[in-house]
Image (cartoon, rainbow, N blue to C red; front, side):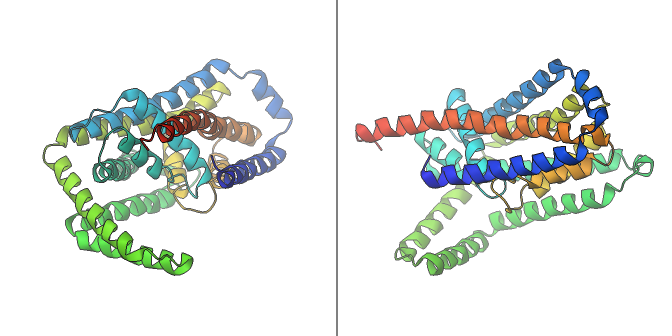
Length: 343
């Protein structure tokens, strides 16, 4: 990584460590020692296994969606790009900054830029649809359960569901009306040009128009001959989110608490929406505060801090570790390609 990226990584980790330290300071008491004494490492290892499995589901989603467009991308390559994506997501505002990495890595494996963009954006669309579906299903199944909860989950759940639904509808409209998407990208490009005084704006706008047309053509291929890829995409996306959302319950069981499965799914849907808001690098601090506030409503305060530390270690710090290793592999490959003149 470049020096600037290391700086943002340090800022991201700094935010996270600072918030976690504050959370631990205000939640640790004499009962915390009792909970730690009965900590079961087997559940923590299982939680880590679930997280690694979810990343494999993500890689399988990329592989099958690319295959439906006529490209054969190795699973190992897909998995490495997912790992590298996690590091970039940790240093960019919100946790949705890894898309350029996946597009670049798909391009390196022989996928056209427009098709790679279609795969990556369609991933996010499927994420939104699946999250919205899970939220709607949770609201329906738990409709008779809301009154038994001591807190009001219905309101934030409803607004989270509405946010995801609106985003998906806007995307669907832009697909049917490519000029709408081009107009948005042009306005963004003009804003960037005014801010950084770009001298290549016309060429860049022409490139945008070309890639938007290419992208819409790829989406048409998904709807036409790539339906299997979409079906597999929905399957692996569902497995990904169910696996990720189960991690918190496994950690709670490791601490000797009930899994709070339904409540945990609801809380993490809300947190997932919060973490898409570009406020801090990798949403560090935002995730910790959100988890502390929401989980603190129904689990003992003595273990809230320990729980959040373990949860963030698996879903954030592990991502940074494997992301650095994957990025080293990519940088080494790029240096070799540049040396032999293939870059």
